[in-house]
Length: 277
Image 1: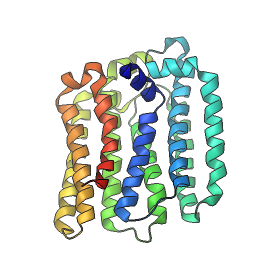
Image 2 (image 1 turned 90 degrees about the horizontal axis):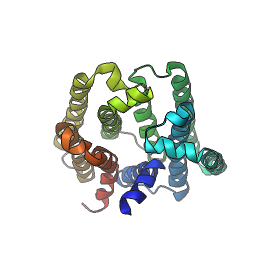
Image 3 (image 1 turned 30 degrees about the horizontal axis):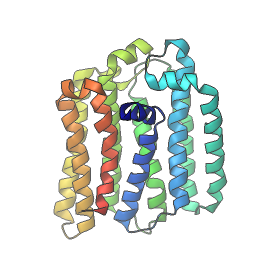
Image 4 (image 1 turned 30 degrees about the vertical axis):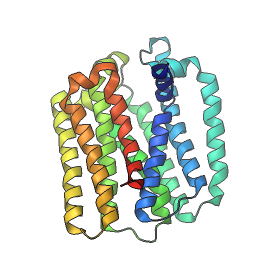
């Protein structure tokens, strides 16, 4: 019963939505600022709309050829989900006038990138490319950072490092998913970075990205050793990186029952630990 429930939660991208809200709250805690509930709601709605629209687009292209459960689900409830996407978008837009100018500027940049992403999908079609994963990782991270950074009076070097680390972690998350689903992606004619680079080079890129995350964490801990909040944040980011490294190091174990997705998406819940350590 729980497995079925979790399957639908994943199909609806609700785990991704919750992870993005937790990560944004993590940044607010790190920056010691209060993020208005309206901003977190808009973030949740925006993430859900983007992911759902992406799945609807894929489902529409594949029609009866869909093999992934999430695409079959979106194809079955295409009309209902489209209506919900429009409703969620309308609610998010209606809340925007309450936000400060800085937040709206970041939101505008994200909106432009999202529009470019869907244009890119239309242009490249099923061609193998690494642009899709990089664009999604960047948009996701910008969305998570939008509220806390726009409310923060100071943007310093450690925050820039944390942004880079989040982009790399989100990118590795996407690359690992494509790594495990390479054959299905080819069958469904989905272009991916793994098809472009191959599994061996992708694995090297994944490990290199994770090494950069760990190296930046070590640098921050040594250089700003008096900043206890930064040290706590970097411990969590390092834990996220180690978890992703474990997935790529043990592919046989994590491919079973799609464990790679459970832990891969689950790492974005780890920042909630900042409230307890």
